[in-house]
Amino acid sequence: METKNLTCIGCPLGCQIEVMMDESGEIALITGNTCQRGEKYARKEVTSPTRIVTSSVRVYGSKSGERTVPLKTASDIPKGKIMEVIRDLRGVSVPCPVHIGDVLMKDIAGTGVDVIATKNVE
Amino acid sequence: MERTAYNLIIIGGGPAGLSAAVAAYDAGERSILILERDTRLGGILNQCIHNGFGLHTFQEELTGPEYAQRYIDKVIERGIEYKLDTMVMSLIQTEDGLKEIMAVSEKEGLMLLSAKAVVLGMGCRERSRGALNIPGFRPAGVFSAGTAQRLVNIEGYLPGRRVVILGSGDIGLIMARRMTLEGAKVLVCAELMPYSGGLKRNIVQCLDDFGIPLKLSHTVVRIEGKERVEGVVIAEVGPDRKPIPGTE
Image (cartoon, rainbow over all chains, first blue to last red; front, side, top):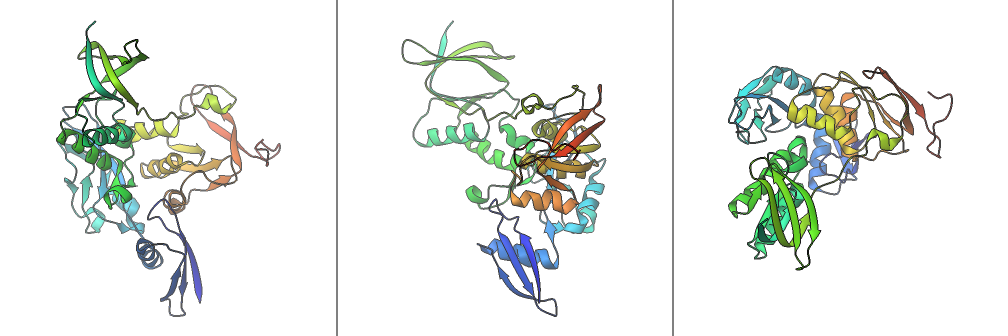
């Protein structure tokens, strides 16, 4: 029986979660979480950990004189792909106006997930 | 000078000011003015581009600018008046029992306003290097976490390629990740106290995810470099939080 100790990143509480794995590597028991979100996080974190990636890229033609627009992956992506996502964003520049939810790049780094804007830039 | 009268004036158009304006409007107040010194509403949330906001209020995970926009929309929907690029110069109590505000903007010049009530929503300020008493010259390349955050996320500059972070508050941790993603090498995050001042989830997803070491009970004792920062000396501190000689 193997035990993995995790800190939940679902909310500011940061619950300490213990995941017990049986001999075949299957999850046997999850304890320490105080909500459903925590159980879901623990399950993912020991099998295939994921993160939402946030960053920013340049904009051009902004009427309000802004230089960047912040962005995020529309959903979580495999943790191992974080730097690939960032690499694919390098040198990207998008025309204004941009609005929250606008797709800036489709299927980033082959994750099947789009990158969307998180701020309105006129 | 003619005074323009409002019942409620809110100084600061960040999360506190915006939610105060919405709450006052929803409680029946219609004579409201928000004064904001920046070029847009939203305050510090505009530079907090990471996710993790809004779980309680909106039951979904938003980034700072998205969270701010929810409140900006509420203010605009209600037709609440606001002035941008406007700096408050003074706030005094006058003999008629009102509060008098003098403010200035490039567009409108000097303006005199009166209010029955004033809400102060101007946020907080970071402690500067001077307040921490770190000896040495004052070379370029030393920033507060919030300033670095503004430079990277709003202005689009990377303030350095080899980075040491002093303090492990949430913005320090978040900037460790942010600067790593932007191509900088974050060598270490040093924390004076024997525990981190940041959230556990930020230790996990900002330091551990990127293999950035956290040195507890450590502080910066010297900053090297005259024109530009060239290095820092870190030492371990004892239970009295004073550097232990020989641990540099």
